Amino acid sequence: MTSAPLVPGPVTARVPAKVNLELLVGPLRPDGYHALSTVYQAVSLYDDVTVAEDEQWGVSVSGALAGGVPTGEDNLALRAARLAAERFDGTPVHVSIRKGIPVAGGMAGGSADAAATLVALDQLWNLGLDREELETAAAELGSDVPFLVAGGTAMGSGRGELLAPVLARGTYHWVLALAEGGLSTPAVYAECDRLRHGVPVPEPVATPALMAALRTGDPHELAPQLVNDLQDAAVSLRPDLGDVLSSGMEYGALGGVVSGSGPTVAFLVENNEAGIDLAVALTASGVVRDVRRASGPVHGAHVIHQRVD
Ligand SMILES: C[C@@](CO)(OP(=O)(O)O)[C@H](O)COP(=O)(O)OP(=O)(O)OC[C@H]1O[C@@H](n2ccc(N)nc2=O)[C@H](O)[C@@H]1O
Ligand SMILES: Nc1ncnc2c1ncn2[C@@H]1O[C@H](COP(=O)(O)OP(=O)(O)O)[C@@H](O)[C@H]1O
Image (tube, rainbow, N blue to C red; front, side, top):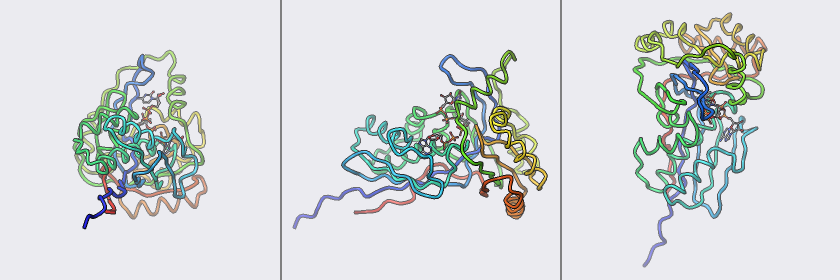
């Protein structure tokens, strides 16, 4: 008796969001990107991305946060799948995304989906890619895609795609204030350039005090080191973020910073209980649309499920 050939079943990868603990923005480079020195931390808000063999390329998005995500060729996960197919001789897949990461929120949701797609296809197509091969493909898709493959806490240089490990002890607790609508990353970088016009901008260098704070594992040490050179630009485009930042501090956050290009604001709190208190206070205040609690660091994109058909 001959049995039907085994078809590889759909593979699901889970991928976290990120916050930038430090985001130092250097001069605009000739290729249109800014030189960066950043420290990323992966935090426990997740998208789940499933890839399945199909007759044609496609992508679908579900979940309460799915609004605003493109479902055509612009979707970064679909772009990741097509890039992987070109490079590794793959056939069409359908990508299904369950969104738990705010869209256009400065938490790298699209980049996360691209990272998860690469990791899931590595398994679906049995490619056996090593970390370097995954991160090289990731860098072609966006500056912070390699970090979403890596996860943890890491330093990013170049345009953000060159990663180096950072020694971080402990677990940090975050309250994330979500905003109505998103901010465009290129628009925020452009506003940063506009605000700094005529001011000399040095090459960015990671702050030793931040690295020292991360080695202590103490959120009180980390809080004063949180810094984002895009924050003024994000607040300039969205002045309501100024109120969000001051409310969070008033209600007991140890520190607060706009996440990446915003408009999400990340508040560092002492522990889980303090996170619950701050989330309740911010929600009751009406200054934020919605809040999420998260902790970090967590792992980067990883396979959580493969169905065997
Ligand atoms: C600002 C950051 C901070 O981590 O995150 P988000 O807020 O988007 O999550 C990143 O730099 C976003 O990285 P990513 O979203 O991957 O950006 P990319 O697709 O590579 O670039 C989109 C556009 O952002 C601008 N850009 C991006 C990276 C960089 N180092 N300099 C830039 O000027 C450029 O205008 C570029 O065309
Ligand atoms: N899979 C995806 N998830 C979210 N946004 C996506 C995706 N693919 C493309 N995009 C586009 O990327 C833009 C930036 O989204 P996102 O990566 O969530 O934010 P940010 O760059 O602020 O971290 C969105 O406005 C959306 O148009």
